[in-house]
Length: 375
Ligand SMILES: *[C@@H]1O[C@H](CO)[C@@H](O)[C@H](O)[C@H]1NC(C)=O
Ligand SMILES: *[C@@H]1O[C@H](CO)[C@@H](O)[C@H](O)[C@H]1NC(C)=O
Ligand SMILES: *[C@@H]1O[C@H](CO)[C@@H](O)[C@H](O)[C@H]1NC(C)=O
Ligand SMILES: *[C@@H]1O[C@H](CO)[C@@H](O)[C@H](O)[C@H]1NC(C)=O
Image (cartoon, rainbow, N blue to C red):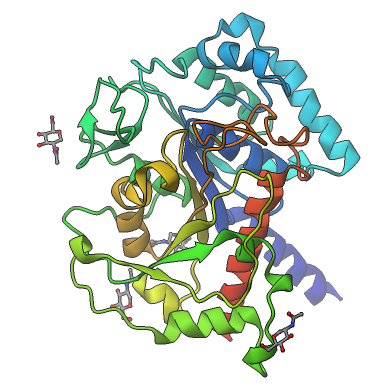
């Protein structure tokens, strides 16, 4: 009996000491707001986040009339206590996980000093919200940067908005800094071009969100996750340099083409580092684009040029790049932003929101593929 007690105590202390990193998330701008939503709401699944130039959780309170305040302030008009209590009421209703899960979770918050799109003082409110739950926060507020994803090797000048890609070369590897904080500080940093010899795949988002409706009759003794896992294990790439990184399409069996008015694009991307298709157990990180940065507008540039892939390859992290598409009616989302004010669903900031549930389902599918890869 004492042995059991000690074993349980030992396991408890080990699990407390090592932060879980099996599923984490980061994103820019509207993707930053979505990151905060996902982490706060799915905190039993998601255990770390990087909020890059994004407005705070539930800032718009379901109304597009509040969007401007949530971009430019004044912060005195943003009722942080009320935003926190909204999350608490979702927890009570069972539409958000208990906030006790958030304790000690790593959170990274970035805002460029010259950001003209989401003002630094607004972004900093994320710190207030996340610190109220005892998270482990690293902030990055000092760079002379504009509104964009910061890199050390691609994009426009650091201080000026790059309206083509919203990626800025500030001689700083933000993707690395974010992931390194989330993963506890011991990640390998890319110091020279990294050969991306893993699998960069396009996935059917509707199939990933609804795998149970895929017709697997033709697969005989296997299920869709084993089928995908086997495809990842057996299809080989011969690309030696990052310039030759090509997109493969994960085979789809299906017919699932409609995702209704969810805002999701038909395809998203996933990068499987070389060793992650060869039996290595790899954590999953979700990276969310900002407005005007989806596949519909810039293809795979966000996925390939922000620096995530090189960090992923050197550290065995699977990266999911879910994609939102621009729509002009039903819903009206002309810039292809993630839903952080309620354009697509009154439940946009809890588990029932279409985009929230959709990303969660894609994470679940990736975990099921991981389990099949291990088998
Ligand atoms: C990035 O910016 C630095 C500093 O301005 C510059 O020296 C470097 O050449 C730039 N790199 C690229 C790839 O544009
Ligand atoms: C970092 O440390 C953690 C905990 O010791 C370990 O699980 C992980 O594999 C390490 N990561 C790297 C890239 O060394
Ligand atoms: C599933 O696929 C099989 C074989 O292609 C086909 O005979 C069957 O009708 C399909 N089932 C559904 C529900 O579409
Ligand atoms: C990938 O696996 C190879 C062979 O086991 C090993 O040499 C290499 O260090 C691994 N790479 C990473 C990033 O773990």
